[in-house]
Amino acid sequence: MSLFKKVISRCQSIYFQGALYVKGKRGLPAQTKEDIELFKNIFENFTDKEIRIFEWGSGMSTIYYAEYLRRKNMKFQWHSIDNNKTWHEIVKGKVNTKGLQSNVQLHLREFLPFWEKPQWNWKSLPPPRDVFSPESENEKEYVNFPRVLDEKFDIIIVDARFRRRCLKTAKDFLTPEGVVILHDAQKKQYHCELDSYRYSKFFKTGAWYPLQETPNKIWVGSMENESILNALKNFSHIKK
Ligand SMILES: C[S@@+](CC[C@H](N)C(=O)[O-])C[C@H]1O[C@@H](n2cnc3c(N)ncnc32)[C@H](O)[C@@H]1O
Image 1: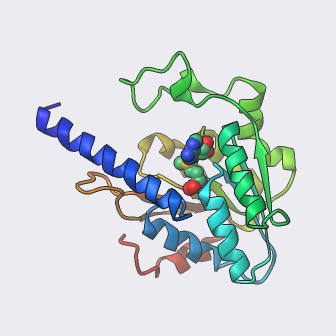
Image 2: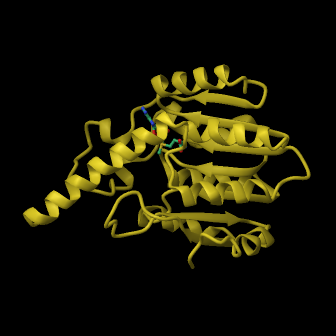
């Protein structure tokens, strides 16, 4: 990589970290504003019943959207799982402070992210598939957590560790109208699992930093609900 490219890449990384920090301080999810609008649009397609939501990757998204749904007087139950105990406790503190305990259940299955494992090598991105497959009981339970809960969900959000595995689990735990939302769907390493969904669509959702080469994307998939994907086509901020 040329020196110029290295400097640009370093500046982008600093910009990204700064943007993430500011969003966290403002109580916003680690998402672009287009991501946020798309998420809200999806939630609003489920107004006539209690919405059941499952999320891999707890965070400001859990708090922000739970407060949004409460403000809109929508009935919902939100289950969210994380692998990082410190982070789980921080999010739990926020759930309690905001009085969301009756709507939000946080779960924890603790394990190290792949970049903290001894096999990790910064030079090989994306991480090789077989080296970082779920192995420990906690990793396997995390990936299979909807099975542990033994429930079906209207919205399943995939936004953390083992995304391909989570996508594989998710399709068996959708209600007939249910959808799966994959965040950071621009990353090609997640794509091999997407074809197993009957209906699906990618949405471009802006950029995190100036001169970002690949735009952010969200993928929405469903086994039976084609109409929600058609409804989202009209979402004004989405370029096809
Ligand atoms: C990409 S983040 C997304 C979290 C959430 N869905 C959101 O949008 O706010 C995924 C993972 O990063 C980790 N994480 C996020 N922020 C963290 C922080 N400030 N400290 C430690 N871990 C963090 C958590 O383990 C989480 O599962």
